[in-house]
Length: 452
Image (cartoon, rainbow, N blue to C red; front, side):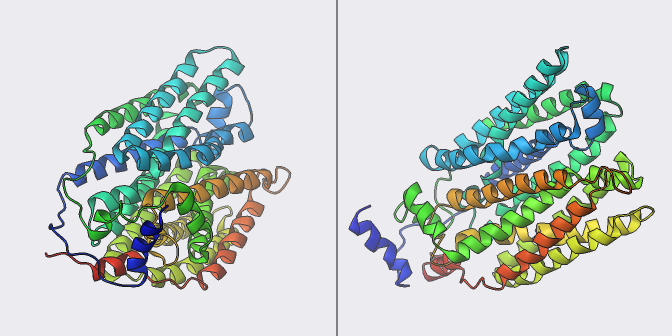
């Protein structure tokens, strides 16, 4: 990078005014079309991710008793694949376009969903699960292109008073997909014989969502904000962006906090049926617990997204809500037992509300914090957050599966797994006390407002 480019970026670092604006910033209604499709694509992505998780026993029987650990890898493979596909999606957003990334993700998910369905026609047990897993891997490669896109899409199409709400759409709709999977998969797969129909329905849903993605506009005619208009001028290379982020402790705190909390939420919902099943809770009732967890999370995330858009009080939410989440994971250790369904439901509701409320906060702080993210591309900073959540989610899933007590009372209980979650949930609260960064992008735009 030239010395001139470095000097130009120092303009906002030194809090000087930038050049006069020669145009009026504007937002376009068509931005909601793309946002809606991103939301739907994230819903379909989550359903593909949890295609077998809500009915592990039926899936195990359908795949010739391959074992619950193998069934759990239908979820785990999404997290492993993210290590490669996550950075690749960021590169596609920056080098090609955000639209290209969305289309690639939607097409890959569609191909993977149909491959998984076609596996049901194979009679050889090894061939059947092998093709199903190949389909799952293809779906997994497509997921980051869809999950990572919300923050860069919001920065490209939305002004500062709508970015927080727009950024949360991916995480929220991802959670909606988890809820839908928890409800429709058990409803369709009432036995192992119904697994082919389940895979067919999921493939049709994925295809229906993918087709309209080809018609998303590539970019707005004029930028919605000063930060969007100045992006190319102050842009960094991928390598420079990574180094700048990795050496900023505030950003690292956000990555760890987001990664742990999202990883715990993903792992918990993936094995929720296995957590409560040993205590006499049916698959359908476990699905309701997962749905309640996510619906409450939707309410919390929407409310929080609107709150931070209007007030900019990101740090307040971060420092209050993270310790609360840790406490509720601890409470779960004591309430998951027989004949305690209503209490478990209440804790799932509260845990979901406070956990998902942190989604828009963390995604926006990954771009806003000083000495780190801004003006690093949103596609890179948000991708690093989601990658951390996927990697940690995989680790948590593997550990939780390993901590299952097959010889305990009741047999197969996962009490040790819940203790493991509580330890991480409480420990992460300590990190949030050290976070103390201004909202740099908002400050930058405030100094360089164009005419209304």
